[in-house]
Length: 356
Image 1 (tube, rainbow, N blue to C red):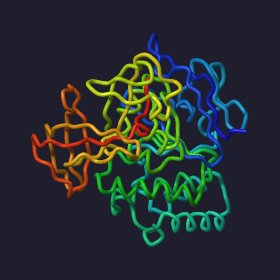
Image 2 (cartoon, one colour):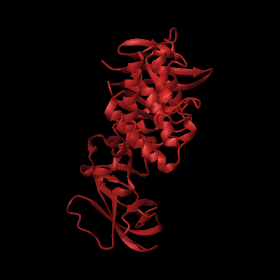
Image 3 (cartoon, helix red, strand yellow):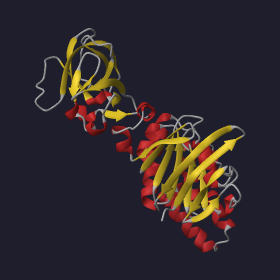
Image 4 (tube, rainbow, N blue to C red):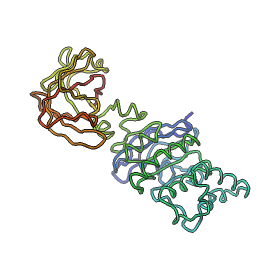
């Protein structure tokens, strides 16, 4: 049985459908991110799970029991869920200890039990030495840890996070991604995480649901989602990619002034007619001399039309000979090519993901 399940959930505001026929199931202890651009419906979905708004149709279940439907909804305070907002919402007049203990006091636990639970969770989030400080005396990352501790100390059935790192600077945001994943691995609470940041979702999640226009375009583990996107939207939203269009003719796929044998593609069985592929920039290699294609890779002559040095890598634009294509290529720092230099592109058809 799923821990949390959304079945055919739709949310309409007048004539506008913010969420459309949404289906999602989370296993016990699973961390799933809802990833997508602003306006795709991810926060509306989270608010329906939390009980702040009701679905227009469909149901939301926890442990097999319906908690939301168009006709009835369990109040948020009775759902055994904790939610963390962008603003953290920790109380400035309370110490770290008091903030974390608040939910336990509301539940009327014994003082000794409250002390034990609070001290335990503060050690998990590495704030035990700061328990007597007030929020104004903490950094942004420390305040975020207080919010996390307060949310999980009550041992919710489901933890909901609404873009919790959006107010942090870039370096701190990167650090907190790993902190959230570490905390999840230690406590293993079923978690739904809303973000528009691809890197956040990739670091923290067991699975990522990419949303577009109120629907799930694709849900998969981070590696599969990046390596095998199923749609043009997912391929473009998850990292950078090259879109290459072609036509299946007999036993070959013909592109702009070059072709590849159909048998070289991993998904060759389903290829027919007009086809499109996603090819990541780091999946293409550049050479000054033509390499052997004995390993099944495709080798094409081309010319460097743009380049940018980004410290950790070079970013090149290369045009295959006689083609109108411009392929982005990521190369290591020592792989230096000049503008207008003639080069050879080497690409592996198995890394070309068929998209619709």
